[in-house]
Length: 247
Image (cartoon, rainbow, N blue to C red; front, side):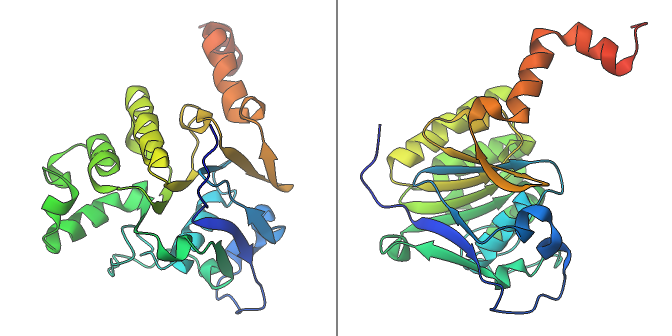
């Protein structure tokens, strides 16, 4: 089903004339080096690729350029535990629609620093606005799903970096349901992920980051899908090839 509403962010653009970067690492990644403008799906866009391909780096730069804290949270969060993000954000421009400029919600989630976000929520006394129970009293996976179902309201832009890191396969299915409910409430997602379950969400675009740059691919063309399917269909054969004939 097609939704008539405008996306919050229409595209991401790298304008290299805006600043000189202190660190050249991100700019020299093949996927980033070849990027000028990337159109975003009005509902869900996935960034996929090997570790170190630049997908999380670009997502983080988009978040910081849009006013989010580099470690995660809303645009009202202003804390840092360690400055580990690149300054690629200096080049990034988000093409916002008129609707996106007046959106009512937004959140940047980084799996690796969500503990710090949970601590900041407690420090600011915002627990009851986020959940019925402190995130520190829940497992990592429980707190992720709790955030999706109790804090995120829709009508906003949500940038998620590897949300599957704390989620079992069953919880990833619950994540898909929660995400779809938010999409129905006019939310837009950009997600960096390795999960073939999460990236199966329909009516989405998948961008693969690799040595040749960034290419849009179909779900069944992704290495994530093909490797997972092959392994699940023939686990014993694949294990023998990987680990030796004597298993």
